[in-house]
Length: 171
Image (cartoon, rainbow, N blue to C red; front, side, top):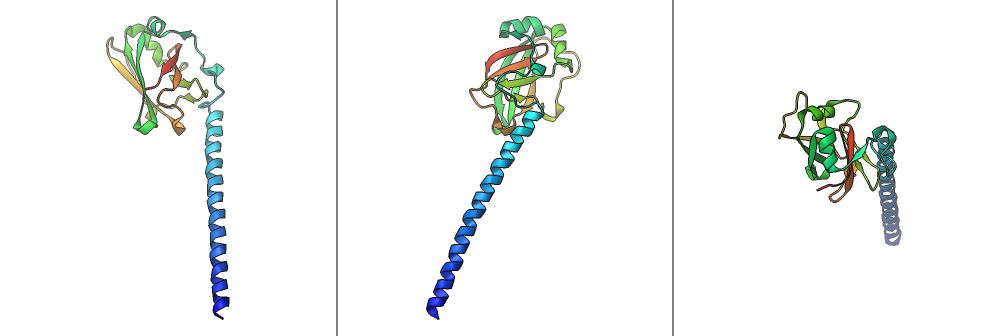
């Protein structure tokens, strides 16, 4: 009787162990599927694409110095914040009349990761500057960084107004 009881306990332990392993594998599979689905849906919504700037986002490529002439702003910083979940883009207005192009809805601001093609374009809480820009003032846009696609040291293409500046390092 004691042997039967011990054998029964061993079977219960073995079944419990097997069930635990199966459950752990199932959870990992579900997490992977959800992660892949999130990336796929982000790709379909225009947030992540092939490793080049998608046609609907392309603008004339200019140097950082030419951005000042074309859009009236100078990029001062692209940096991660919020434990990597946010990207802070700061720019200083040099020419307020030219900077007005940043308000055009046809050319929304965005960041494109040059390694992966991920397009980060969701501005936090739809924050957008309204009204006239002031020369010498530094303004900012805070983007959501879904999945922490952009990381310290990433090279991005910054799309501001009617131009894009390539190879900007993320701090």
